[in-house]
Length: 179
Image (cartoon, rainbow, N blue to C red; front, side):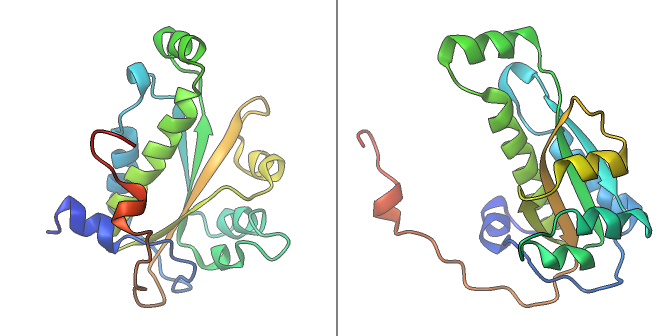
């Protein structure tokens, strides 16, 4: 079993999946459970996760993520986790107003990170998507028109080996005590 730091080091945005290889339902449930357990401001849990695996629906939703050359790899994903913004609790709403911060959007990002790390732990590749035809996907999946589909996590078995992780130097992004 990998440590958390090892998972963070190994996890990458995979943009090439093994076509036709499915992910077992219990594995998908564990991955999405990690997102459900993610922390959120005032425990508001402003999310709904729609998991798409159906062999007829998946390619349609995948196609709706691809335009202008973006996200063509999604056609080979084994599953898509659609992350919809849901109402949060009153405490989180008040905090947003008082602190002028969009806590639910941060929470959705945290939940998507938990999902991708859980996928890595299961040996599944992932990529978080923000580029897609929201209206089309909502029509295909029954997400209510007034809801916002904010993120999609594509899941599948990576078709390419891990890349060297490139990050800014420690001293450029980390300081102690003062900026």
